[in-house]
Amino acid sequence: MGVRPKLTVVGAGNVGATVAQYAVERELADVVLVDVVEGLPQGKALDLLEAGPIHGYDCRLVGTNGYEETRGSDVVVITAGLARKPGMTRDDLLFKNAEIVSAVVAEVAPRSPDAILVLVTNPLDAMVQLAWRRSGFPPHRVVGMAGVLDAARFRTFIAAELDVSVESVTAFVLGGHGDTMVPLPRYATVAGIPLPELLPPERIAALVQRTRDGGAEIVNLLKTGSAYYAPAAAVVEMVEAILKDKKKILPCAAYLDGPYGVRGLYVGVPVKLGRRGVEQVLELRLTAEERAAFERSVAAVRELVDKLKL
Image (cartoon, rainbow, N blue to C red; front, side):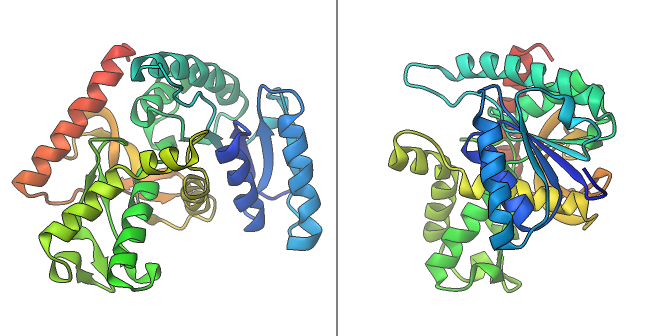
């Protein structure tokens, strides 16, 4: 592969393949798509490659069932893992996906020792912690995608409620990815105007709840899978910020060793994302209520991490 950056995407399911699609459509990088299923990453990579003449991108795409082709990657996105199936507890999912993520990191880290790892596998916060431990990378080079997606959902609902452009809406979501996430209406703005000045508290509460349930809402509609367009878009926003050294302020699962009173744990917070990975953690002032919600979220993440004995 040439002088373009190199992006490896592990897991060629809906999220992984869509990450590859969005990345090449923006000409961000040459892409290596890795999956255990024979023919799947090869087929999707070839199909995407053949869209290049029409979409006008020259990025190369390679699909593989091994890891040799990933050598020297700038960014490695890990989406591999099981989705929760009927009858599976969250703990079942935790241990199974921990095995998968550990195996992936053991393959990619030695081959791309300078890469930045972006984790997407659920339960997200615990998987980022695991990947950091298993990789031996400094914590600023291991980051998780959750907050960008949750904030995008929040922004979507705010824009629809107010009938304004999504481009005018910014929002922040803190904490672990899942039921305990903490959307922050005080830090949500519409063209700079704080959301609480535009909507009554009960409408805001309804939007916050819909944001928390955003993943489940789509699972219930699809019945045979989970969301992938918005999750992939969120991953690619992070990858672009890294590869282009944009220093974008995005909510990500990042390692905290002091900020927000948290030590030694990956949790969703606003960070500055650039070529070195997480270049800064931004500490927001929280109200007593927000802090209590955030601490509940941190406790839920710590419980999962303790189960994995990390």
